[in-house]
Length: 192
Ligand code: HEM
Image (cartoon, rainbow, N blue to C red):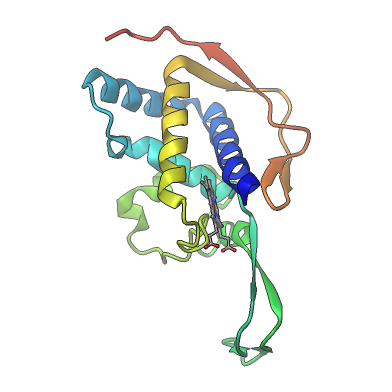
């Protein structure tokens, strides 16, 4: 579990930087938000709604923990009548749940507006289970930690894609085959 705490957040941050590098218009929007927050001398992470939407969409597309398992404690009858017997261990794919096209149209497209509160109203809470339907005891801490790192990174650097396209390596953690390479350009930070 010690590795889980570090590797999940490292994976989440790496993939969100990748997605924002591929979509400079969303990166710019996040940057504007962070700039405004700091100009107003605020430190309330709730004041970063677009950055939060961008993060959630990245966690949908590249869930840091792509699969979990459960042992059935009783027979489970599926809607079509088939039964999963008590004692069987089931693998539950968070990745496939997040790429289900009936819930997420064009699932491979990175679109932070999917998480606009207006667009999320009708969606089942079980459609987005990055933290396994609230099972991660550190969910709030992890989100706060990652948002702070992302905000401060975007404040100081512009991230740009590398010519090598990363290939997902979904193990216990969502890694990238051969690493995830990006270019970073320093930005001049407004002292205000
Ligand atoms: C993006 C970040 C993270 C993601 C996506 C994530 C995801 C998950 C998932 C899916 C589970 C449930 C596993 C299951 O149901 O079988 C879980 C459990 C857990 N996570 Fe995380 N996690 C993250 C960050 C963290 C961090 C930073 C910590 C520690 C500081 C942490 C500590 C734990 C613990 C202790 C559990 C087990 C809870 C229990 O079994 O009662 N997680 N996490």
